[in-house]
Length: 275
Picture 1 (cartoon, helix red, strand yellow):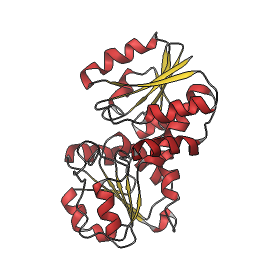
Picture 2 (picture 1 turned 120 degrees about the vertical axis):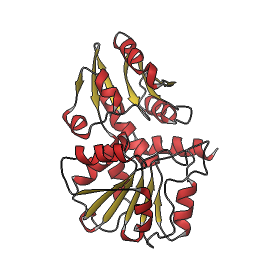
Picture 3 (picture 1 turned 90 degrees about the vertical axis):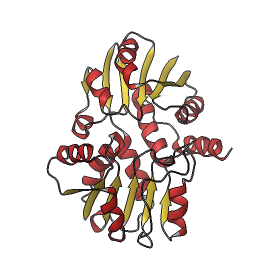
């Protein structure tokens, strides 16, 4: 049996087990995907314990995507450049880190766009592991302009500097709100609005540009308060389900060697959220 899991803190909200176990089922692969809360203090010892375990690997979510790297034996070049890992493969006790977040997000975003990214001004909210991977993927598409806004100035500066001097603007949340009408695409990479704190919002949308594409990587609830307000203001919205499924499918392929049916995975997530 292939055993895998997802670790994070919090982790109760995660629907990864539902979609990954659906993938095992549809492919007739004997496998099991679990979730486990691992606090920052527990991360090092827990990762060490997985080396000699029966687990084929694991996914990594908030808040471990950056700190996990120090506990791994090898890191894929792309993940190394991004500076964050969301997928780990256990290769006979050798732990290898990858990042499938950015590519997964980009696939979903492009379905919502009517113009190419090199014609669009993009704002990312947040400066954690998900923001890193999404910014990296976006920069490969040469957006017209990319700004990143974050509450912590120190963390924001670190991310902007790590993007190696590419034309990325780091701004405060207040500054982002004041110039919101300039942006064609908004992407929330924080956990603001995630269940159970469903009334939280990453940014006020009073100056939102009509017809902007507003994305939220939060997928529980299926439509956050932030997305509801954005849609009411004339935006095209995209929740976190597409990113969740696509990054998960890429991880599944690394553990099993087989790419699953992403439509069925997406249906399993949406059906659960609608319940």
